[in-house]
Length: 354
Image 1 (tube, helix red, strand yellow):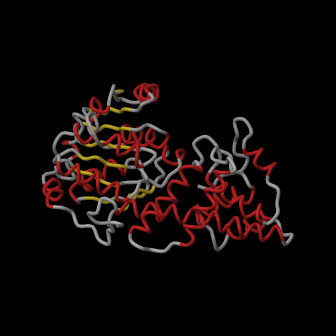
Image 2 (tube, rainbow, N blue to C red):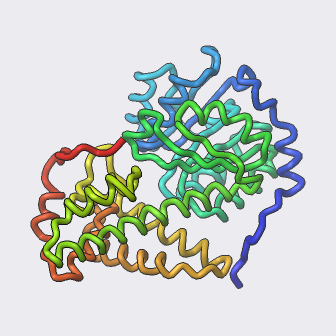
Image 3 (spheres, rainbow, N blue to C red):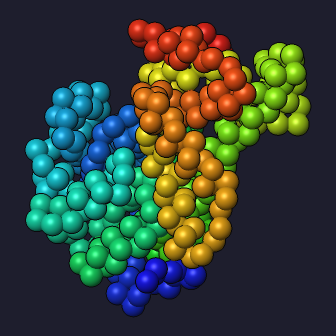
């Protein structure tokens, strides 16, 4: 049987845990902040919060990643401590941030001996910035509440280069007291932190999955539109320029429009989203929809596009590479463009939108 979540209601344990949390405006009471997972997004989040938040200079910042050299680098760049383990990083922290690539890793890092949940002190808050299933966030939040700790879902919309500049959008959900307490920290690494999603710790993940679904849908739609233009003898770039300068004048259509129109899906350092991660997110969309019996035919199409791209060996490219399928379906040989995407040390030869 499929377990469904038409509406999420916090348990009494969650409410009592959040009620015991310190006042949201009492930044001085946050004496320690930890970061677990220092990939490109996690590293940027940690650096922004350490250097830009309004916490007092006495605040202890610690961090852990399986790649110890990354921790050493962050410690050299900021006033922070490279921890030797998860326990070492989070045991004395009031707030812990995680930025991890998938559900399995988040669950592994959170649970078990030496994991975050068993290591947190009572009243501490775990802020998950990962794009994961809402059910994963709900399950982990319940386990935190049983230990007297809080959990906030805060997945991020940002590429690594944007996150490094603090140009991120972050939907946030969870018990209100926990959310209010961590907002000043999230504001240090984002231009737009959105609350209003309620106490369901999985709600922010639903919002993130909805957003990623729309981005993937835009990539697919532009691939089809430009394939139509090309087959009719109309320049792909000219059509892209018309549409993104006028009725589709927004960041997603401009940025991915350039990639799709140029068939430029190179994995530029700090300026791409891996195809495998996009595939993972589309699958999460489909699973989440199925759990509440919501048909999403476009999501099903996208799932097939990502599976096809992976089968063709394109997992090393940006996720916008799924837009190549429309050209191939129209009889266009994209071999040269793919080879160009895989050139050594690729650099963007067009100006990304801001």
